[in-house]
Image (cartoon, rainbow, N blue to C red; front, side, top):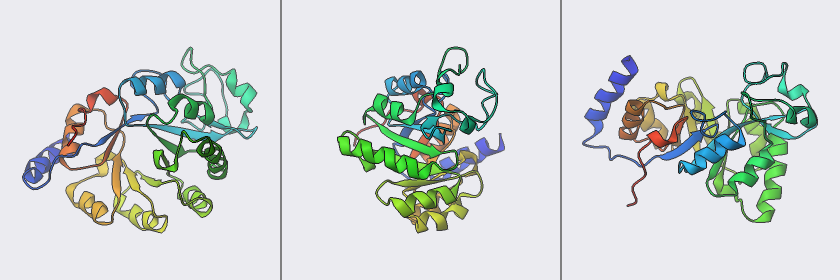
Length: 253
């Protein structure tokens, strides 16, 4: 409640000098509020809801493929137990997610979206940077996907550094749940496009400083309409949400 009141008051204060933005609408793990997160039906739902982008999480499984899942451990969302990185792809294909869904590969997600919107790939697991670069290279060669409609993010800044060492074409975003200002130095070092902070950590002061550093702000995970409205007033660039339909449609200039 405190955060909401603060956002509301600051939004009123800044409204006269800060123009409202048309933030990008980014479906969190597809459309997590509607269908099982990080599954192909959830991503398809996000596309049907008119998102500008989709955010997903990836791990490298035991047989080397990149699979789309959020939790390191399978127990919470599936009928399996154990660490997802210890299963090979054949075993992962047999796992049931939330009664009727399956775990897709990153390649399957790329095929489904087919470059229609941008894809924010969060490197969730270890040793994901290099195989992601290799897979994306294959898709770039096909011509549908380009580096400009991919965004790679991670809380594991070392994995992002490794990605940047081997590829400077794909834009990066620095994920953080702490003070977003602490992410600015690493963002500059990696020539990142954005900082992706916990929305509740944002305020007019740190938003201004992040913008002055030349970085965009894609806030997660914003679900309440009043929080969405407040963040739009504060001028952020993208809203990562479980409910994309709650973000007002972008107005063309």
